[in-house]
Length: 73
Image 1 (cartoon, rainbow, N blue to C red):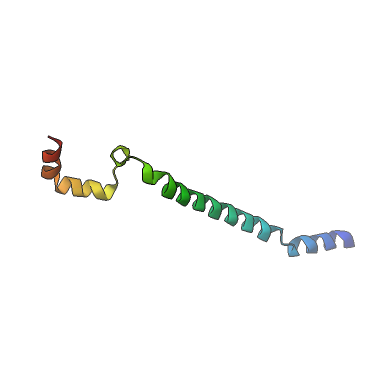
Image 2: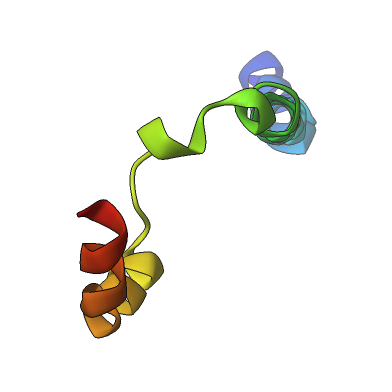
């Protein structure tokens, strides 16, 4: 019985959960850093014409559609 109570106290006071959370946080930060580096190093050489249009640019295109229409014709 004493061994069981000691095991329960040890498991309650252990840092296993903190270690797991720190590992998960480190993995998330690593993935974010890799995404940033991908955007910085690879996507700056991508052709802008082939990339999808953002929502903010769609609003501008609709406001100025006469200008875009004149450029495409």
